Length: 419
Ligand SMILES: Nc1ncnc2c1ncn2[C@@H]1O[C@H](COP(=O)(O)OP(=O)(O)O)[C@@H](O)[C@H]1O
Ligand SMILES: [Mg+2]
Image 1 (cartoon, rainbow, N blue to C red):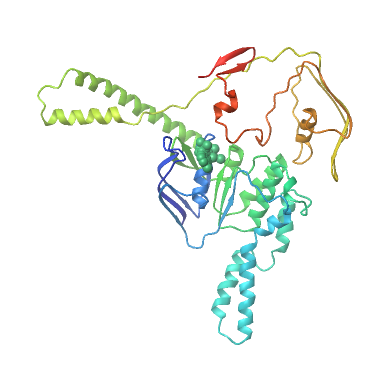
Image 2 (image 1 turned 180 degrees about the vertical axis):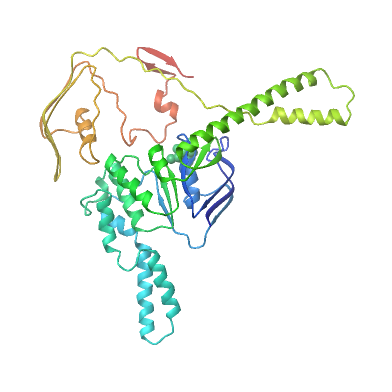
């Protein structure tokens, strides 16, 4: 049964670069779709249009009557001063509303009114939303996503923690269909494994945007690929998709090469001047126009990037001695010793919230330690990529962000012109 249907949908944020043109997509009750494509292809936008969170420029969206859609946005944000439990409880707001209606109707029944049909309907509705007793689901799901203290306020949550809260809220709301936008971003390996299990066990239809091929292989039964304004549907999981996709591209390339061969021949014929313009010649001219005007197949863009050598490092890089740090009420580091030497490439792992980002901030001098010392070698220059990209200017263009207002960027020792 179709749950959500998009028909002939177009969308553009910028009129010169339409994101989608004439896209058709149906999600049925059997579908567990992996939505994939490069960054910026429009996956989040498509998901928002399916969920009714974003508008269509043209085309139609049809949703099955009464369908309850659970949407997990890519970067969830909550009010700073509400608690984790408040947020997760919002997932039950519909449940509470139905329950109240049901109690009121029971009172009407007690007054002798004939409302048994209405009661049946509400009981059925409540059952679909998880039954009478759902309180325990709140704490169970908060625990499930690995959050220990439901009374914490959302203002201090890390990116991974915020996503867990959003997930817990989504799971308690028992939606009829789930739209999940990169749910495993910023999650640690334990929670990813937990989520993967939840998603494979829940038989709810879903559309899942992710770059995690293992998750795709285990959870989905269909792949929808967003590729330069169009979408392509493939039955099966990610492995099966890879095979089918290479067939599609090979066949596109073959028809493009046939088009170019024909175009070459017909161009020569046109240049030679058309003798005797009969109906035949006219048809041939029409065909030439169609060949010449056909959409050119754009190959995947391949970029090359050269990372220049940094300045010479002295022997001393970073020395951490007996470092400790606490946030109010929470000790994060306690007596850490670590020596980072020239040539070392260090991976820092650990569950969400354990203090990985805090350690980086201490090294960069963005936070001040409570005790111990961090010594940075004189020759050290830091390059950083921050987790939530908060240091990007929302108003700046990509060019301005990279090069400022100048016409050059400095790569290693040389200036590169970027007109
Ligand atoms: N609200 C918006 N206003 C203007 N441009 C947007 C907006 N949302 C997304 N875009 C642009 O649309 C394109 C697709 O974005 P998005 O759907 O987020 O892609 P994906 O999720 O596949 O990475 C990007 O170029 C993005 O910059
Ligand atoms: Mg996205």
